[in-house]
Image (cartoon, rainbow, N blue to C red; front, side, top):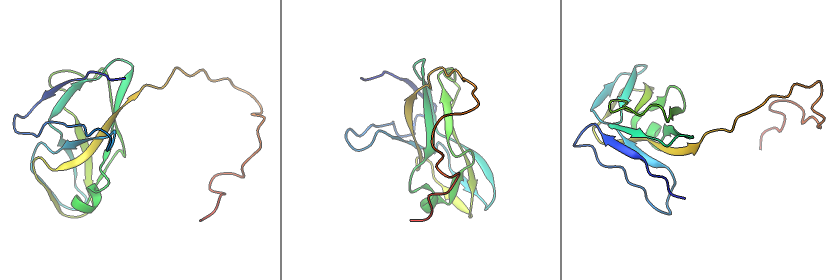
Length: 145
C-alpha cells in the first residue's frame, strides 16, 4: 500500500529523492552542505529536506553501507528517528556524525538513508514471577561461528 509524504526541499540545488523500485526500500539522503571534519569532531550534517510523515509512522535514518568507507564518519546515535510531529517547514532532517579520520563531505554526497516504519503498537507490560520458557543460557552463549 502506498503512502503519500509531503516533502519540502530546503535547498533548491539538492538532488531530489528517488525511490528505486525493486532495488531497495531504503531511500538515500544527501549532504546539504560541504563539510570538513577533523578526526574526533562532531557535526550535525543537514540533509536538505523536511517531511510530513503520516501519523502512526516514523522515519529511521541510518548510514549507507559505504558511508564509513567513503567518508570515515559514523552516526553518533547509531540510528536517527523522526516522528510524525517533526513536520514543520523548518524541521530539517540531519545526520549526527562523528569523524573517525579527517574527512571531506561534498554537497549532494549520499551519506545516509531512511525508510518509513509503522509505529510500535501500544504495549501493556504484564509483570510475572516466571516467564515459563526454557533458558537459552544467557547473553552471548551461542558462541563464535
